[in-house]
Length: 306
Image (cartoon, rainbow, N blue to C red):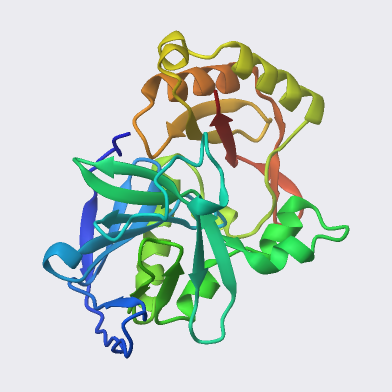
């Protein structure tokens, strides 16, 4: 697999860093920052980018978010981005692809499923979203969205930490990140720009009460249509993908724009899913302020699996 190398516009953020030293042979590898935080505007998201380490130890990290309320994705590229056993979580979602992700300052602990790949021969791991381990035992009567809002990793989680510890790689790794406050403030500005670019109103989005909602029977029908219309080339290649659809939903519930994003290059899968969803989807519109409908966005994640 090759990761899409999408150019972005970078704005350096002058943040300083210090890293604790490892004290034992089996202690995690500790990497200090080798660049300032940068914010990049990509077609489907805003990302925070920073490199850690030098020479063969150098890794590039990328924390991304499509919209202010969206989950935080994680990408790392470099020789240390190797899981215990190389494999794709799309077709081999075993425990070997689980990476524990910890905040050292007594913060929340969680994990992500690492999709393994490479960019120009350099190893990478990617997760579309991070999962807080507290959610596993705290579902109760909560909906999946309520679980996410209560237990999911949010910008607030990241803003309160100064380091990230990853366990489950070939060698445990500690990134001395310093605080994220200024970096995430820059990301918020980037996301407001993306909202405006998509024809949405950042001020109304900030007071959004509910997002667009689709009838469950219609959702199942579209899912069956996507499954039945697996692109021929992808089917021959045995190729799967995580595809995220970013949909503009007007105040009357109609989908007027669809942008497909996926980390790995799968334009045929992206186009197929986007075409079906934009043609057949219909939503109850988003509501803001005093329950008034307005044009907003919906995000639909699709897993193509052979």
